[in-house]
Image (cartoon, rainbow, N blue to C red; front, side, top):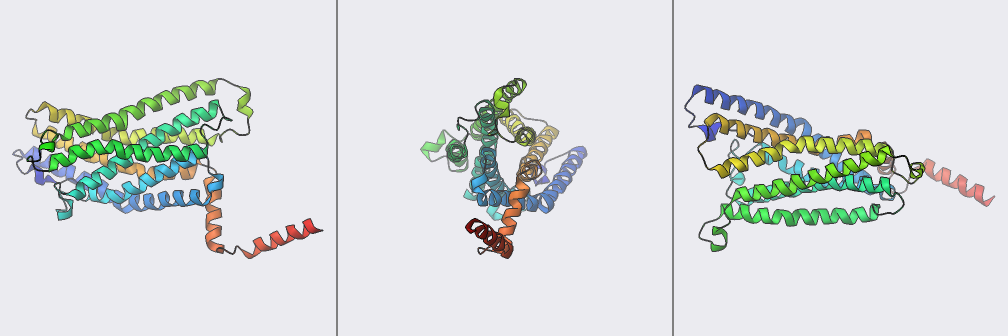
Length: 337
C-alpha cells in the first residue's frame, strides 16, 4: 500500500497533496481487493483445481493449463496481502526490505507470474496444434501435464538468476561473489524480457496462425475429436485479459529500470507518479488471480456439470446416493433378464 513516509522531504504543497491523493486512491483499491477480490479469487481458484482434479477422466488440454494458472493464482492470492498492506504503511518487522521474507515473497511472485504468462502462451500454441492436427495427440492431456511440470521448473530456474541479483543487492558488499552483482535493475530487466517480451511474441505468433487456420475450411472441421468451439472464446478472453492486466506491471517495471539506469536527479512529482503507477500496476497484476477463474467458470460450458458432479459426490459420500443404487440395480436386473 502507498505511503507518504518516503516523501517526507516534499517541499511543495502541491507535491504533498499529490502524495496524499495517491495514498488515498491506492488504499481504496487495496481494501477493495482484500475485501472482495481476495476471497473470490481464493474460492474460485481452489474450486477450479478441485473440480478438475476430481474429474480427471474428462479433463482436456485447456483444463490442464487452467489448473496450472489457478495454482499460480492461489500463490498470488496468498502473497497479495503482504504487498498491499506493506511494508511502508504497516511498518511490520517481518516485511522489512532487508530480510529473507521479502526476497522469498518476491521470488514466489515472479515464479507465479512466469507460470501464468507461459501457461497462457502454451495454451495458445497447443490450441493451434489441436486445430491444425486434431488426431496427432501432440497436445494431449498427458503431454500437457508434463509441459506444465516443465513450466514450473523453468519458472524456478529463470527466477534463480533474479534471486541472485536480489540477494546480492541486500547483503554486505564484503562478500566478494556479490560485490559485482548488486544490481536490482539487471534482475528486473531479466524479468521483463523473459516474463513478458518472449510470451507476448509467442502469443502474437500463435494468434496469427489461429486466425489463418480459422479462415481455411478443411474436412477436419467436422472431426468429432476437435475441441469444443467455446474453447476458442475462452482462449481469446484469457489472452486479452492476461495481457491487459499484466502489461502495465511489466511496462512500469521497464520504465523504473530505465529510470534507475539513467542515474540523474528526477523531478519530485515524476517520482511520485512513477511509484503510484507501480502500485496501481501491481494491483492489476494481482487482479488476474480472481478474474481468470471467473472467466473459466462462465465461458467453459463443461465446468457447471463437473461442479455438480463434485457437489453430488460430497453430498452423498463415498457410498453414493440411494437413488443411484436403485438405478444400478435396475440396469443389472434388465441385463440378467
